[in-house]
Image (cartoon, rainbow, N blue to C red; front, side, top):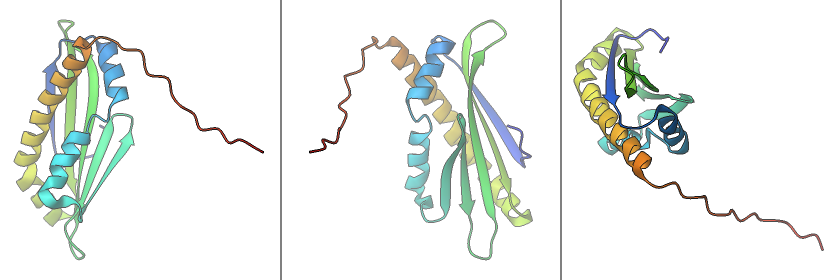
Length: 150
């Protein structure tokens, strides 16, 4: 993540899956959907915007009110190998506030953001391993609607 943040954390999970297979799994699912659902369950819907900023980076922009600033929290997923050659999944998290008051709010909430992110990184790693264990099934044929000119 190349942005400037007030606070960052990185969570690394060793996975029992091939890195290429992990990349395929992450490309075939919406990897952050479950985390978004959990955050929205906290009642952020009316004050938060969730977006995917690139292939593996997701952002939450949380506005604090009409006269207050906002916070931005970015999550970036990456797949790689450790120094010992074991596949690993990394989740980098960065947060920043738009002004001094917003920065204080981000720092106060960071423990919660870290706990949610760390737990999510573990669940995502287990999900990738579960997908790796599943037998490959050929996709079902797709139906295509065709207009018939009469």
